[in-house]
Length: 247
Figure 1: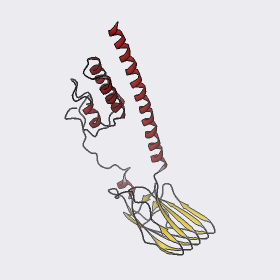
Figure 2: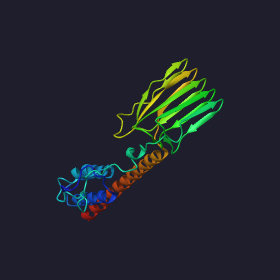
Figure 3: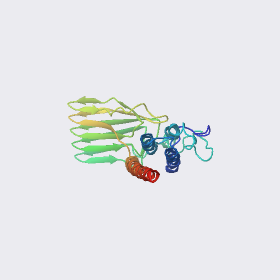
Figure 4: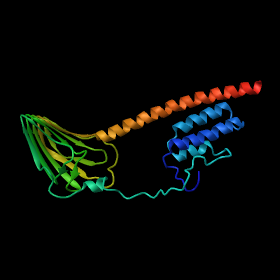
């Protein structure tokens, strides 16, 4: 690896293949035995970054096979408009409150949360989904009154949440703690009263993020399968070379 390559840079399929070629050459030249070759080849197809690839060829003649073909700039780019900075939009908000009496309400999708949002549920329920929402201020307050009813508040990971509600024969459920808040993320304060009812504050990822994670897992399964096939091919080729040498 050259000085221009960051060990944290994600490796491509072509990078892994270049390292695999170096290992095959080392096996043919007798620099690696079959057991070492199989261990390193398996590690190649599991590697995600240049930092994981580089040690696999460091003691071989062609060390640096994991480096990218050209220098790359690794200066961190500023936060774009798609980050939290682009979601603190100011203004009055697109909805100031909601009421559900023996019915229900929803606030979800792309909407703007006002600085203060008030909702009331009596023998009914409501859903306040903030995962795709914009925010009128860096700190917003959601006041929920649930009487023999319930309200669910859904927040994305990275958002700081403070729950201050009072429960009387009811309660306010806190979200699962998933680490410190992300830089620039808004602060959501949930308060109010739950009487014979409840307010549930949960963290969930968006559908797009869930699909992205599912695709990553699918790619990992494909790479593991390809790694096994590559090991089988390498073993077969090595057996054939041994037979050729014997004859």
